[in-house]
Length: 640
Image (cartoon, rainbow, N blue to C red; front, side, top):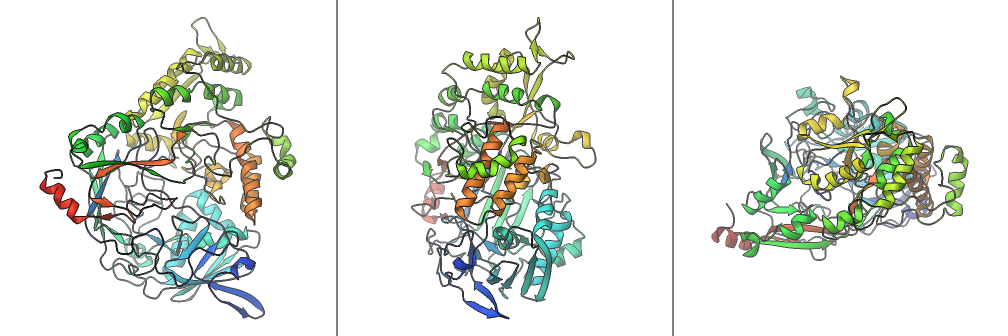
C-alpha cells in the first residue's frame, strides 16, 4: 500500500510498527521477571519478551530508554507536510484514504524500541505470563490505563478489539489471527488470556497478541461504527495524542492529551514531547516545498535528491532559519520498487517481466537525476544480513530442493537475481538487445511500425500509474527506453483519490480492483520477519492492499512457513535468504533505490538526542521544542 506521504525519490513519513517473533524457555529464565511453578508447569512472568531467547536490553526496573532525553521539555508544535487528499480517520480499512497519523490515538499491549531488534516491552500490560511452549499468554494489565475520554481500559476492550479485527479486519490479517489464536478469555477486569492453536508458530504467538491495538468497546457500541468502513469520526484510543481539529484535504491537528494515563511510565519518559502535531496537506511535493519556504510547516523529511542538492538556497535557509541535516540510520531498505500487476495476462511470462526490468537505467538515473545520493536495491532484505548472497548454502538447499519443481530457473544453482547494471547513457544498448531477445522468445515481435505485438495482433502496452508529479522525471526516461524496445509505454498521472481507488480492491466491483499495470510500492520485510510476510507475498494477501502485485506462488507460501517456523536466529536467516532468492527470481519488481541516512530540513527550533537510535528518526516521538530558539525565529519574522 502506498504511504500516506507521496513518493518522490525515496519514501518518507512516520515509520510503521513491525511485528516481531517469540522467546524460548531457556532465554525466558534469563529475563528479569520471575519464574514460578503452577501445577508442575514452569510459567515465566516478565515485563518483556524477545524473539530468540536473548535477555532484553532493559530490565524490569529501567528508568527510561537510553536514547531519549528524560528531561526533554514539553510544549510547542511540530508540523509536517502530506500530499493529496483524505476522506477517513479509520486507518484499519482499505476503504477510503485515511488521514496522516490517523492511528496515533491507539496503543498496543506491548511495544518495541528504536535501539533494539526483536524485543517487546509491556505498555498497557504490566507483566505477561506464559509457559515454556507458549501455548497461552496472560496479559496482566495496568489498572490505571485509561482511554482518552477518561473511561477505564479493561480486558473486555482487549477481547472486543480482537474479535473486531478477527471479523472485520483486512482479509490477510484475519487469516493470520485465525491461524494463531484459538480463544481469548477475560479472566478479570485487568487480566486477559490468549490460548493459541497448537499448530501455529510459537515464535510469534505472544508478539502477535501483544501487538494488537486496543479500542474502546463502549465507543463502538454507542456509535455502531465498523472497523471495515470509511468514516470521518475517529475512534477513542488510549494514546498520548487525540484529534484536535481538521479541515478536509487541508490540515489535521493532533494535540497531546495532558491527562494521558501513561505519561510517567518508563517506556514513555522523554517521549511525546510536542503539545501539537500539525499535518499540512499539499497537492504535490513541489507545492509542499514552497510551503516550507513560506513557513506553512516546520519539518520536512526530504525525499527528493534533486531538491536536496539544489533547492535549499532560498532566503529562510540562507539566513540560517532552516537547517539541513543528514542523520545516519541503520534501517533495512523498504523494498521500494516498480511493481508489475501479475493479474494482467501480459505479465504472466517471466521473460516479459525481466525485459521490462532491463530497461530501467538506475546508474544513469542516480548520476543524472539523483546526484549520486542513492544505492541500488537488489534484495528484499537490502542493507541487512538476511539478504541472499552467492550460491545457496547447504542449509538453504535443504529448504529449496524439496520445492525444485516449483522454483524459477537458476534458484538452486546460480547466485541470486540482481538488478541489471546499465551504462552512463539513458538507453543502454546492451540491455536493449537482451530485452529484445527475451520479448522475441516470449512471442512479442516487432512489426513494421516498430511496435511489439503477440500472435493475436495485440499491442504490448504498459501504463505506469502515478499520483506524484515529482516522479515524472524518473518514470519518463523509463517510458522512453521501453518505447525504444517497441513497447507502447506511457505514464498516467492521476489525482491521489483516483490513484487510491485504482490500486485497491473494490468489493462492489471486482473488475475495478487493482486497475493498474505498474506502480511504485514498498515491501518492508523487517529484521525478524514472520507472519506479516503472508500479507505482502502470500496467497492470503491476494485480496488486500499489501500484495499489490497479486503474487500467489506455492514455493513462496512454503518458504514463508519456514521463516515463521524458525525457532533460532540461524534458522530464520537461512529461511529468509532462501525466500529472498525465490522472490527475486520471480522478477515481479524492478527494484529502485535507498539511502542510509535521513535527509531532513527544519526550522531551527527543535532538538534531538545525539546520537539518534539506529532504527528510528523519531521526530514526532523523542525530539523536543526549544522555546528560546522558536521565540527568536518569530521575532525575526521567520514564522507566521
